[in-house]
Length: 342
Image 1: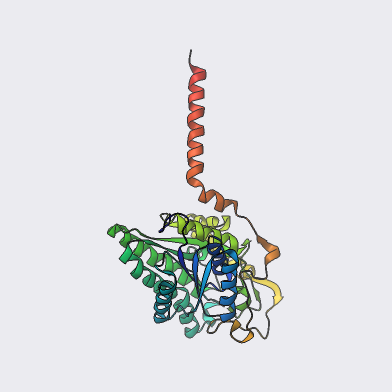
Image 2 (image 1 turned 180 degrees about the vertical axis):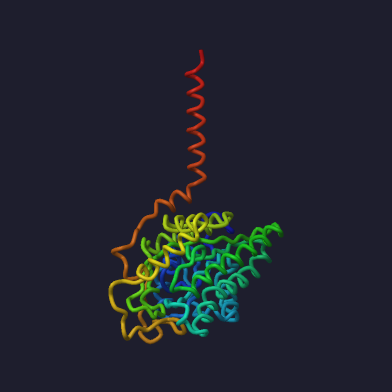
């Protein structure tokens, strides 16, 4: 589903575009020759993302933005529409986290994670919606997480924010339906992805943090974001078999998962390598502020990460598969009826 004529470039805004799945999505939209506005804090990451978009065939606009400040988000949107025209697609990705037991997280840290990871989505959605409603067209994609359905230990602030995103998005969706609006909002629930966040997240763990296996490459998430942007009528998209298992498991046996995660949730989020004593995190300032290093889309877990997700392909082709299955069933029924005829 496109908000512009088929084949014409769309104007896309991505928050958290300097690294990880936001960076991979920017490259993917660029490959469609879209006009991609890149919002993030880190200058080196933004510059690298712009280069990715332009090398892929799109046009890029770098907008240094802290999404926890609604005024900065509004100003960025104004610049996007001045440069590229009306915003067709807004993708909320930006987040931060703290890996630590809740009892050791400070109020300032919890507030910062909430302001970026939850309120950043709220402000981005407000900004996009105020423009899209006037035109009665546009799509907002919320990049969620399996942890927004089933929380795990050591990430209380992040899990709380991801749960909150689901709640406010459901409320907004019902309002848009009430208005019979042609603006759409959808959520893409991600599995563990191999992104640089595990190298720069604030952590008080004794060992280096890692995504909970199985781990997927960010390009899998990027493909899901593009599909959701083009087909936003579905409420949610689940990416990866682990997201499906987590979501269904929470619905069917939450108490069992409580006990399982209490037993495994600490070790599964840490490698065997001791934590770096001189570790620098990105909670209050971008990691590349001093180093000028572009960290790209991938983290350090390439060897353990999956490049494909059969579940994602099945989910995106569910309609076609259902039609094929229905056709096969009808054919079998006719064949059986023919065989039984006297």
